[in-house]
Length: 142
Image (cartoon, rainbow, N blue to C red; front, side, top):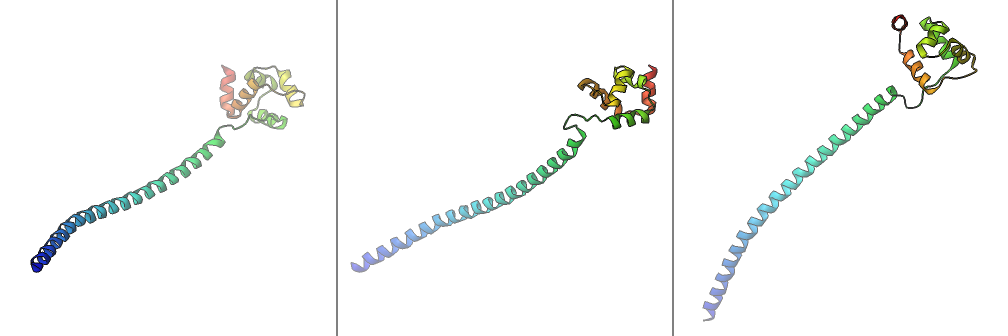
């Protein structure tokens, strides 16, 4: 009887080991799949983070290039610069005054340093800086 009991006990343990092995193999396979998926996601995340970094640098670089074209502060007015601009365009004080919407006497007082242009007049002066002789002549002929 002792022999039958030990045989039955051995058979039960063998069958239980076989069942446990089958279950643990399934767990090992799914665990392995999950690990490979996690590794793949980590690689993908890393590459996406690198792309974001590159794009941020590009955007900041482009924003840095675009910033100087837009005036960050109000435009400066210098007597010497205004005189040289008027000379460059070949304008008399009267013609410059009519372009800017002021009198010739105002132009003379700006150039003498007795007064300075207001904000609305500064906008016109800045616009005048981008014009050439032909464009100014066309505007004056109108």
